[in-house]
Image (cartoon, rainbow, N blue to C red; front, top):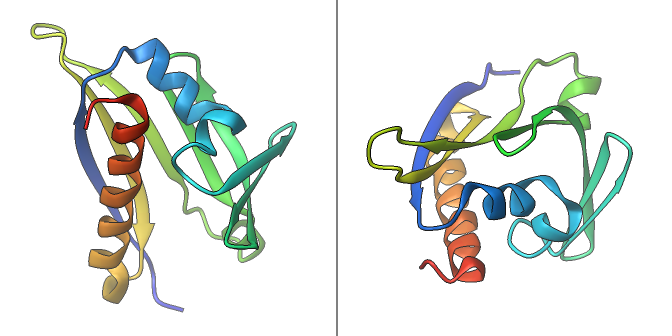
Amino acid sequence: MDDKIKFDIEFPIHASPQLLYQYISTPSGLSEWFSDNVNSRGELFTFIWDGSEEKAKLLNKKSGERVKFRWLEDEEDDQTYYFEIRIQVDEITKDVSLMVTDFAEEDELDEAKMLWVNQISSLKQVLGSA
């Protein structure tokens, strides 16, 4: 299996960090923009798209700041891949950005980035900041 490549994307967003955190850290918030439905049981999150399910383990979260997940499929393969969504506030301008870190195989890198662009675009529409 090819090693995946880590990538980071920054998305400026016009929303308060507190509001954003609700949308990136709770099943109800995530189901408004990330997938059709999200269920959680403790650290295990189930993301549902068009009837198919993907499970991810919540690795880390810091209130008001970030969430970090690992797809169970990667965990079963002993992979250390993850995806993280961080809220970043510029100290001087107070501009808010979402920083996304994810991994993709080289031939799927552009597709993976485009998926995040589309997902964050959906989030911006939900927030009314599109």
